Structures are given as structure tokens and as C-alpha cells.
Length: 212
Figure 1 (cartoon, rainbow, N blue to C red):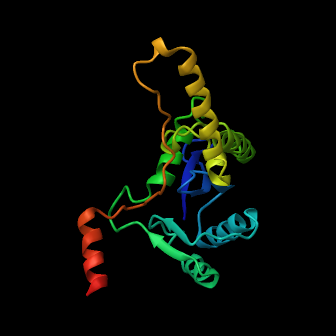
Figure 2 (figure 1 turned 180 degrees about the horizontal axis):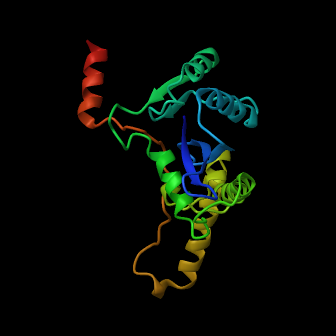
């Protein structure tokens, strides 16, 4: 499942902005694709989704989630998703936190210590985003995925790294037993990711409905 959104990047003068389009895999937090444009529209959004799939070797998500912005709910995007067999998912009306993964990623971007007050040009915005997303995907140890980088979770090597870290910690503990009152444990890698996780009551209702 992918989640995508558009955010404004401040331009060289007051009232001038560049539009950053970003799509993220919600399980690994990996930024699948990003683009900077001079505006926001359904046509640009449609091309962005096509480019994201192309950038990932033609592999499309089963579901694409977004909020209810005009570009996200445009006819051109809806027709593309239908044609590709991708399930369209939108946040609930008037609910501000139904696109949490994209919103959290934008917060990480804008609270980055080197995020500028303004970008001097379109080229500056693209150059900054290129450096930031390279760092974010490959060197940012994300708390939501057990302090792993999005890339290692995305390609499936995070568990092997987890085993190596665990072995290193255990060897250190065995060599220094008096320094530990209990066996240290590593942050866990999540087994699933949700936009809106069903509560236990909802799960029970679904089971009862399917059994009836």
C-alpha cells in the first residue's frame, strides 16, 4: 500500500511556492517516488502516479491512499487507477489525520535542521529534495520501523540486520555480564501497517457477519 500527498515548498518571494509530490510505502516508510512542480493539478497527479510505477520497475501498489485534495480526487487519477487495477483509498471527509504516513514524512522534511526558510529557485528546491530523500531512504534510522532505514525494510534485509545486531549485543552482554541487570532487547520491526486499524469490536463484527 502506498500513500501520497502534495506539500508546498516556500519559493524565493512571499506567496510563491513550489509543489512537492511524494509517494511513500506505508510499511517500510520508503519514499517510492517524488517530483517538484510549479503547480498542482489532476493531469500532473496522473503523470506522477505513472512515473512512480515506472520508477519501481512497473510494480504498482494494490492500494493507493491519499487525502481528498482536488488533484487526488480528480477524474484523471481515478481513471488511471481503475485502468491499472489499483484500489483507490481516500481519507474520511473532514478528518485531518487520515493520511498519517505522508503527513509524518512531510513533517520530517520540514523540521530537518537544514530545511531552508525559502528556496531561491525551482532548481534549488529539486536539488534539496534529491539530497534529502537520498538521506531519508538510506541513512535515516526511522523510529516507526524499529530504528531501521526505510531502504532495508523495503528490500527485506532488515531482519538479517536485526539478527546481526542481536548477536553483537548478546556477545557484548556475555563479555560484560555485570553491566546488565537484564537482557537488552532491540526495537521490533513492525509486522503490519495500517491507515485505520480496525478495533477488536470491529473485528468481531466482521467475523460474525462472515459467519452468518
